[in-house]
Length: 351
Ligand SMILES: [Zn+2]
Image (tube, rainbow, N blue to C red; front, side, top):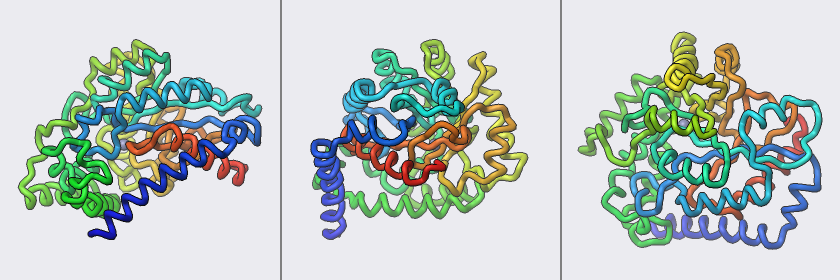
């Protein structure tokens, strides 16, 4: 136990230190703007929630004040553009003249509307929101959230979030490090299991721990009115399937339903063409050729993954790379991530 807590404390501290040293001593501005090819960085957030409200699953949430700092920083150092413009630029043969950033959100939590949307509007940034259509307007849990809630979220709800930060005694008392590792293991295992069996396991695990997964607070998703208002203010709404399954586990019928119904569902409700898709999970393993083909054939213009990296002209618009931003990331960590991604992109020129 002690070793684990010390290890985690050191890990977060070390990450911050490395990012700070890099930020202040490495000439990252000239590295990004003068050396090699310019790139489009697509950033992905999940939840934007104030510190006091994020005790359910704190690790994927970014505080709105911190988020606004990111926006100000990104606007000052990059050209922040819409996804439509990014896809156009990537389709051209010529090299980019500057570095661009696109800001995206996965899953469709209601905090995206409450906190991210006003800030994006204030800073005139067109964000992209990939929504899971079967959950719109509900507080049903995404399956991975259900696993996280069962492992550690339930213990955190009674605890003020500042007490769950790495380094705080409560963090150790709840054995959070251990529980997070447990949730990660369960999620990795369940990704290989079909949808029905996965949900059976989740219900059984919840029952064993005496937890009721219905009508939980803290998991509310955006509703159609929210999405309509956002689309009316220049935000892009994209599809993230109907039920957030692991697409590679599905037969062709189910696959077409998840990818096609979600597109048509949003189009009917918003009276807008829906052109962009985000693969749930979105790792290399999830991107089988049949999954990518189905997205293409359904009529999308682009699809984003969770594969880390920068995007360059000529990139396949159906396997766009992204940079994940999480709770412990500030602007220095974002800079470090961009530089690493650019360095890797330079190494693999075919990227
Ligand atoms: Zn997702």
